[in-house]
Image (cartoon, rainbow, N blue to C red; front, side, top):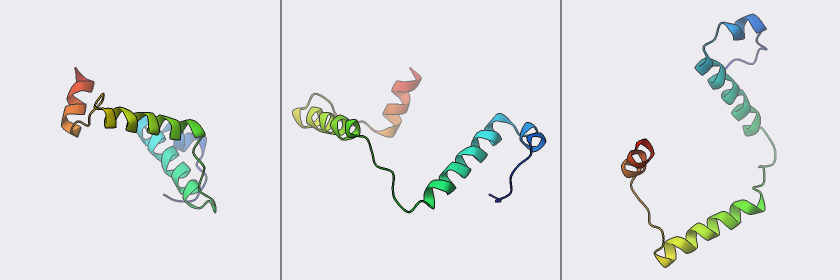
Length: 74
C-alpha cells in the first residue's frame, strides 16, 4: 500500500470491497508500527477461561473448520 493520502475522488472510484481492504491495510500498517502492543480487556481472559472450562467438562467440544462453516450456513 502506498503512503500517499487519497483524494475523495480516488476513494469514490473504489468498490466497497476495495475501500474496506484499503482501510484495513492502513489500520494494520499503523498498528504494526506501534511500539507497544494493545492490551486485551479483562473480559477477553474471562471469556477464554469460561470456554476452556466448558471444553474440559465436556459441555462443549471442538469441531472442524468444515463443520463450523456448515453450521453457519444452515
